[in-house]
Image (cartoon, rainbow over all chains, first blue to last red):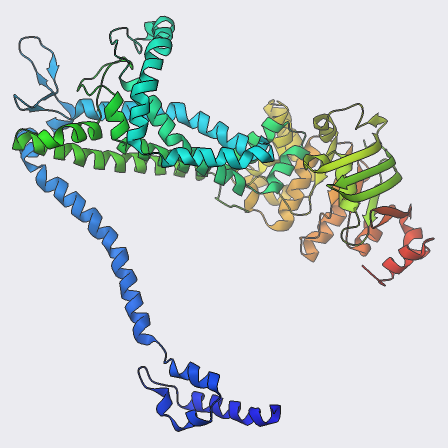
Length: 364
Length: 252
């Protein structure tokens, strides 16, 4: 049997070498096919799939290009539809406000009289986001350290699952929870302490009894960005080789020193990346913030004061914008949010570059 | 200067796996002692018991007595104290990739709050000279990262890092097994020079290496120490049949 098969195979191979099947040609038409084994006949009948391959290639190129398409479409739409506001205010939109001639106070946002300025929203977005980072980053790193380095095995999976579950809750649910639980809590127990203890700094003024404001928004944002930062931090910490931990331990390090020198230090680039992602989410987050920040277009030093963010004002006013100028101003805010996000990301990348330039980023 | 190590009735487990059984051993001060044996015989576990690294694995367990310079390391000391006195070099070079060469060497001292720059400079230079790396790295001590060096240089950097804290004992767990022959011979030369100042315990797969660097050699098999004697005797006239079979290449 074996001897009988050998010439067949040889014949087929030489036939393939001398006469490769052309794309689209039916191999079954070739005379050698009749003598081929059933499997070889089947394989040859498949053709070389060149057409399908090319089709797949272009389909994937199309998918990739659609990303550029979407970005360009969004940017053009924002630019085109914000033209009226841009024509009316120019760059002043971003750093000036209409000054009321009677009171001498700035009026940032007055749709009725057509005064629009992005300032209070830029301020609100940045303040609430950085407040969120300030609260979330240490907590998230703490969670990640506990989960990777000291958590008993039976607790690890449930705790990690719960942390990731936080990311899956819709933001309007966070908003509702904040309105009914967080706001009263802060109002009753936290804010009075802050006002009493740190009121002298000016950051905690006793003039807003609602419990809404920058701090409340910052706290709810912190809870929302906690899972993304902690799960990413956890992943980069797990990726740190065990040999690094042993190297530090062998030098006589305590557990905390081992975590600081052997784990966090090696994972720091990834942790910065995680924080950037958290910041990105905080900057754009709309619903929960709109529900607790107070929606008042003002710039106050006090973190307990009401404020507003770019995304919150767009969500609140878009449906009932009274004039073309109002609508256009909201569009321009959208454009500004777009640009702020890009600037923040660029800044964060620069930070990563500054952190990493001293040492070649070699991971082993 | 180094100190001697006295091991009495040492047993170690990984989970239910009894990896070391009733080890009794006296390791002399200021000499190199080699531990040989086939893979999985317990020789690595043994050195990891000498600086209490074995127990960093949550499923690991140790019983018995280990006296290092007279100090009972399991009864009378914390792991952190022991590891400051007993340096360790691992099988794969593990420098800190985010630190400069200088910071890698100074890591142990900085960890313990040492911050006098003049003294640190001196110690870093001395340690790098002791590990025969100084000439190759002295120009970019603070410029290059520990990970930018070659594998052999990285291992000598790890030796310098261990030497910087002035240990009494230096444990080396197959320090040359991941290195090329040139780097290996450099490490061996180094061990030869260092053994007058430190008590060195070296685990090795390579019997020639044991014969070249060590005065004493122990042969481990299946978690037991079969024979411990002068290197010369082990390699020329072993008293146990199993040792003879191993060194003549009949198994392992």
